[in-house]
Image (tube, rainbow, N blue to C red; front, top):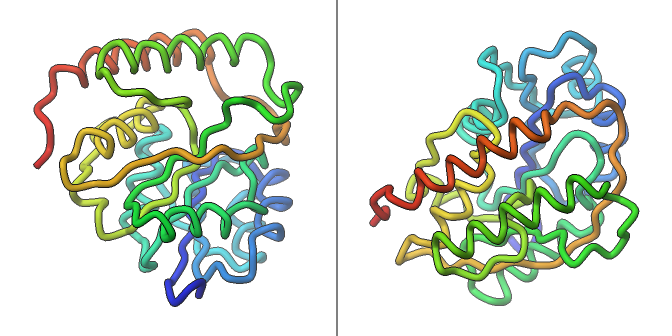
Length: 227
């Protein structure tokens, strides 16, 4: 428990046995529930996660969004924190981010990587891709956001049904933030966090995923606002 709230951390994984072995031990003791989504891994991700005390949810459908849908449907906590299994997002700032959510009476906080505190943690092509997609979000939705592609979010579990993200792929990340931004009943903000170099092999298909995300932004622009 943290500030009388049950905290659940959800981590989608595909072949992240090395990363998850290092991420779970760094989570604060205030975390009550750790859900690792095994997205059809071929390594020992599930075994490692279970030995470290996580609840493992298996999702055979490949995709970032599919993994998150499976993990988020299993949440029992009051506040959800999402992270990647590669060690890039700061477990050491989880309580700090929750404080920001609660102290400012917010419903959804996106952990912004920008401006980067450690410029060397992200390569140039990723910086360019993130900048393009974040600028596209601003142009299409007329809403200022510093990091449309962040994979770390902190939100009240009670609002998830109001968001109803549909993507099974990488666009899930931008979709859930845009849904929170546009919903008239949800209070949204960003909070700048550290970003660390990746542990293990890169799975992202940079240019293909970047183009898919850009096209999905255009699709979202014409999607009715949830009320």
